[in-house]
Image 1 (spheres, rainbow, N blue to C red):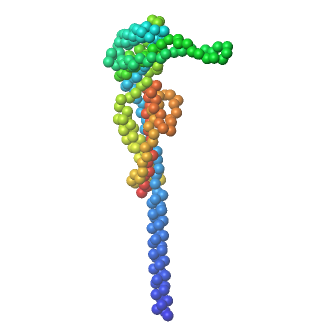
Image 2: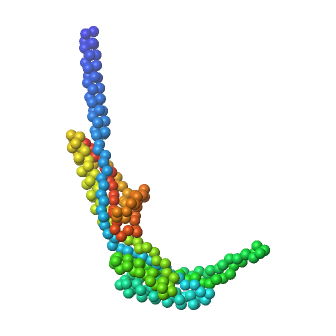
Image 3: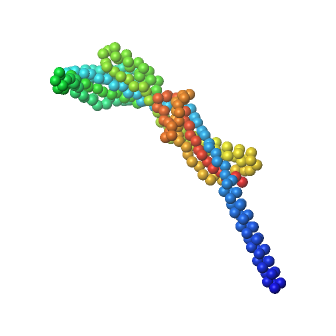
Length: 244
């Protein structure tokens, strides 16, 4: 009986030790999983666009198609001449195909019958300039309204600005945002009396380009400003690190 009691006591003691070890390991595992530092790194950079794209349209209307076509050709020559006088490279001046519309005016008589009357041919054409000489194109877009005094029915659009090294800029900012996230996580670990461990997870935020010094809001899908010559690029990186 004493032997059996001793055996049961040994088994009970061993079971208690095993339970204690399992419990300790479970707690250690839980602590390890929960000991992560989540941070968001940020990087931004101001830059100037190096490509400008500008367009304008002009049109002529006549009852005679050949007359309207000849007038539009004369306008096209004046527009080209003006742009070249502004110092724009002729190879950067592109005229799109002529658009021809037959226009009508609609009427109704006293009996409620409707009919239309042909009012002429309306011919229109767009001119586009894409260049890396931003100053010349900017100046031309402002001054081209002077052609209106020569009888040209012209409408000028605002220039749009782009950056040819956008992919390089993205990679640079991703690197800076990642380093910023790591530095923030390291500061948190140090202040908590710990040290920074391995990177567990990293997610790239949306790339945003806004006008410099503009009160322009970020968008869910990413802002991409084309109206400002001087811009600001911004990106975030969300990262999780273990703490030792």
